[in-house]
Image (cartoon, rainbow, N blue to C red; front, side, top):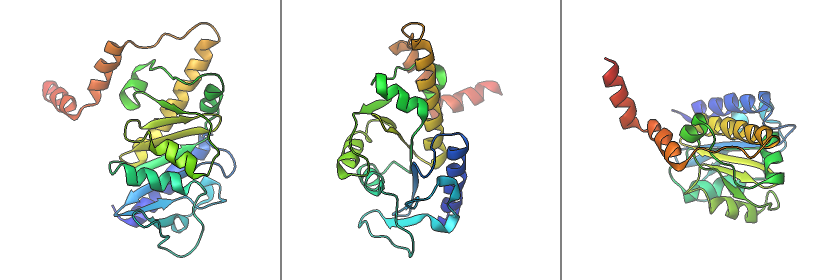
Length: 219
């Protein structure tokens, strides 16, 4: 995949983020890693307004902006520190999903409740409110990125990571759906979470070895 491909893919998922109401206005930011650089949304743009050439190229090691043009998102430190901390991260999606924000106003621990959540997301962690755009928020997120791929930010939103943009984005959708389900169920009674055994059984279905074995059995 080339830098041009990365820029086009960022535009694709930026549009999906807006169309699925995971951000409003100029909120949220996306990035992807490619050959020692990260490509990050520019400051002041609604995500669906960004053209491929407007994603800001930043050298991960030095922090230097290595192309000419726009200022990077004000959450640049959060993205930069996360890539430095975990080389396995290929993309980061930071959004302001309404059900996720609503969840953080009343709770902290989002239980694993259904198969897609177990298989695609796993355990979601929580960071209490920290002033956005600061190095304190970047440090708080980075403290979690080696252990969790989905991080709820109190009174703020959600950060998801993945090996690629597709994985990071779909984790965003699943966590938002999980928060929605929890809030609806909680209006009636305490939601029933999956047991540890049920969670581990479903999570194991995501392993590549299982997929290969399943395909062999289908022949």
